[in-house]
Image (cartoon, rainbow, N blue to C red; front, side):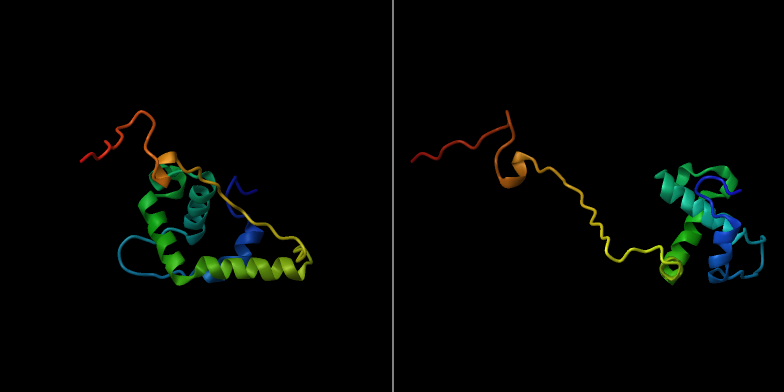
Length: 126
């Protein structure tokens, strides 16, 4: 059973071929699955990369893999596969739409008004 924010064996089987194992010199490469689990943990928990759990390996390694996969479009390919699979299973309702919005309250000063209790401009007299 997968832990929280980690891929199950079934989910990994869907996307495993998107990740290529390259063998080079030096240290053995850490598992792409472990690195992906670390990425998912950071993104889902909202924690900073440096606060990542040690079981995923060095945070800098996980972050580097995240950047490489992002630049290669690996996450886009994963999303396309997920969308196609869910659509084939009839689990996507095309009649339902959601728009997410964030409201940011503007201060009085943003519209040109002065701050409360702040300095006001002196009237010009001739």
